Length: 118
Image (cartoon, rainbow, N blue to C red):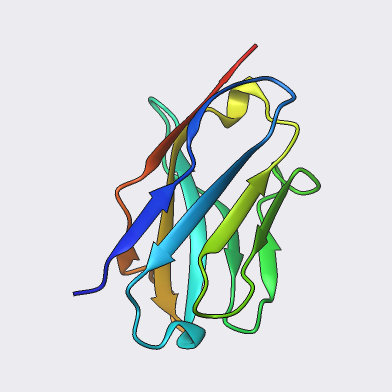
């Protein structure tokens, strides 16, 4: 059974930074796209960023220039560096995985809370 686990959430003030980490038990992680999503209270879950096995990245417009997704190689954790945090970034952040070339993220972590105070 594939497992994903997020860590690194917490409470920070506006303008500060946090780094989230996602570890997986995928047997062939280079064949998967790892994505970060977030869900704020009363809102739908939204895409934040994603990275392929070849380290191609994609970001939501709302986080471009502030967040950075990275991985050293396919077997190391996927990191989400979040800078210049805003209160609107407050949410539960989830990492998820899908096989490259597919549309649906089928594996999800339990989430980690990020709270940004003004």
